Image (cartoon, rainbow, N blue to C red; front, side, top):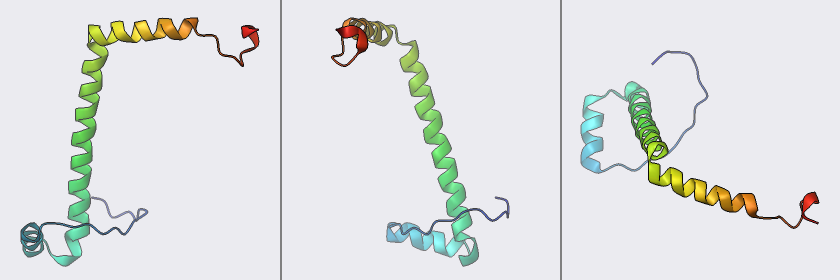
Length: 87
């Protein structure tokens, strides 16, 4: 992680005691926030990639595409009461 000063947020988290004790024993006090930041970034990337893969899979699903087209056809026929062309 670079040393450029970034906006920082102070937050309180709760961890299982055994995990925190191991972490505190292995990571010196002045490095803990940086290590946690790296771990959080890695987890965010992992979850974002997983979500992107799920979206890609859904976008390729023919059944979902058909369902979306069915709903789109319903939207195309609905006349909104406040549209100028509805009256």
